[in-house]
Amino acid sequence: MTVTPESSMPVTDIAARRSPVQRMVGVWRNRELLLNLVRKELKLKYKNSTLGFFWSLLNPALYLVVFTFVFQVVLGSGLPYFAIFFLAGLLPWNLFSAALGASTSSIVGNAGLIKKVWFPREVLPLSTIGAGLVHYFLQLIVLALALAVFRYAPSLQFCLLLPAALITLLLFTAALGIALSALNVYLRDTQHLLELVLLAWFWATPIVYPYTLLSNRIGTWALANPLTAIVITFQRAVYNRTSYYDPTTNKTIEILPEESVWWYLRNLGIIASVSFVILIGALVLFGRLEDNFAEEL
Image (cartoon, rainbow, N blue to C red; front, side, top):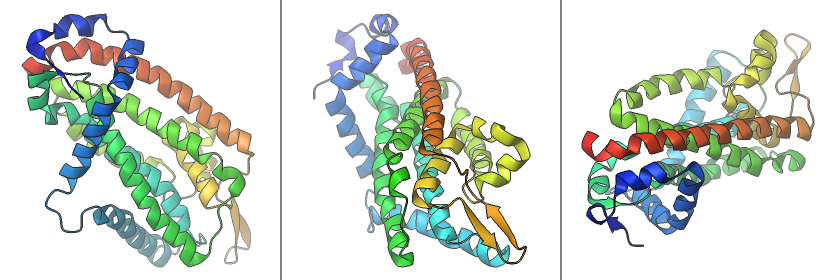
């Protein structure tokens, strides 16, 4: 894949004429470059590392050990098969948080490349999301091992929603990543502020606690968090139970909504539609800000 030197193309004029649709088409036409950048991201992440991609497996495994000890042993949570429940929500969250953080700093981190050649700048944040997707599939090995160890069967019916949930998550991440990557060029505190936002966002999403604990207090407003609808879809498919009987209180404790496949699919559709609108806005914002990237970098 060849790129055109900036000296031979009027980058500013081209950027000003490109609509969001043209930008998406441009990314598709440069998909080979995008794949090469994904490979570059993966190689750089574990450059000179002995364990290499094995580190991707250690991350969710360590989280699993720590949170299981805290919530099951220390706090005495009676949630059965907590490991399955937790991993089902943690893995999509890891994909979202890692990809969003990397995409936010992708333009600044590739300043030398941007100054030398012309190419659709949007491929930089998208390449980090692509690399995050590879790590996500690797981390699924930990979930698969957990399912095998506990001999736990997911819901085949709700597993049909997993591709839709994953696509929705990627669309939402891409929309935010493209916008934040452009803002971070001018406001370098963006990437640092994002770390704090993601920390609060993690605990606002029902990953380590049941969705019903949140919905019982704020009702359907719990679904205002886009990650909530996505995470509970993963949990409903993989964890495959909506309640359990607590012998200590002699009560049935609700975990996830006892709703149909269509209810979960409707929520994903809403999030996907909103994400697409955000993506259009992000591309417009990116187009307006990218004219002076080289000067700001």
